[in-house]
Length: 219
Image (cartoon, rainbow, N blue to C red):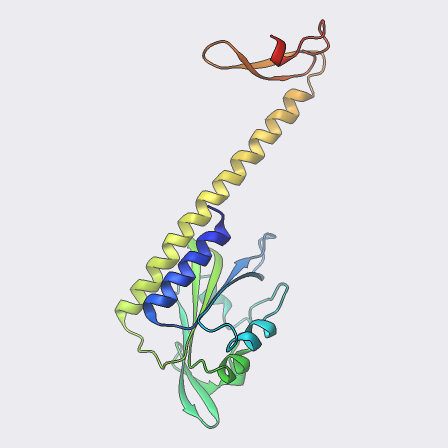
């Protein structure tokens, strides 16, 4: 499975089970920095209702605020903010602080509020101790944070982390195979063949075709 396909299924299943309205995913920048890039993979229970939130989402890389980085890129299971006041809009954070929604250290939170969301979650996706992405989730209700919810979100992130790990391993295998083909192909003066157990040549490199017009198909 492609990572994006797995993310789409997880967001849909999780939001439908919990009766949450919004899910989106970010991937960590490939340059190894703390930047995050939007996947464009969403779950929206009512697309028209949350169209403004989707439109306000950055289309390129973001750099999380310094206050978030120790949590997103360390071992915190999740970050959350739950509405406590409507006028003016204020949220209670996982850190224990209560702040205006506009001061939340994440993009377009006021837009999310205006779309009707009242609970906000960031769930790091990790391969062991390395954060490789973040799930962004939202609910129209004022959710209760308990051990069961934290465990559920943590298990989801762990399973997605394994998908990321398999995809990474597959990319590395392809990279090594391409490198091997490049090295073997550079042996112009030395024909190299790869045969199966029956002795039939399945791939050739180098000067095989230059020797008497031979090819893998003709040997």
